[in-house]
Amino acid sequence: MKTCSKALWTSDWGDASSANDPKHTAKVTKELLRDSVNVLEWPSQSPDLSLMEHLWRDLKMAAHRRSPSNPMDLERFCKEEWEKLPRNRCTTLVESHPRRLEAVVAAKGASTKY
Image 1: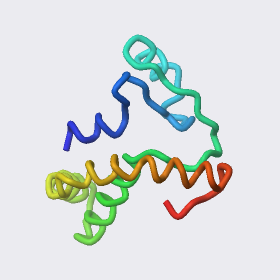
Image 2: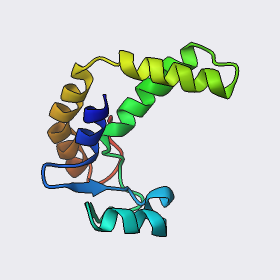
Image 3: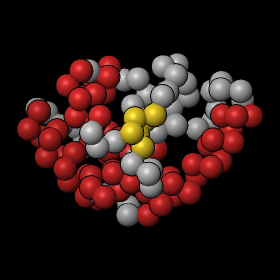
């Protein structure tokens, strides 16, 4: 799934969106990204079009179902569940992106079913 993560974060041109998340706009992060990735401008209150967020949700739900009782369990469960995520999940998310973009445009930037 490591390759999938990178594919969902960057485009073919090495662009990425941080969605103005504070951890991505920190000075140290900006400096790191400046030389290797073209970070796209992104309105802070825009609909979340990050495909990676769907994978994070899948992982969170799977780990939660296992009821970790401490941080070590949580880490182990997350690693195990990440490996279990269906390989075609990334393809499905990437293929759905044009529909997601069209829905946001149709909603004039407001919330969508995605």
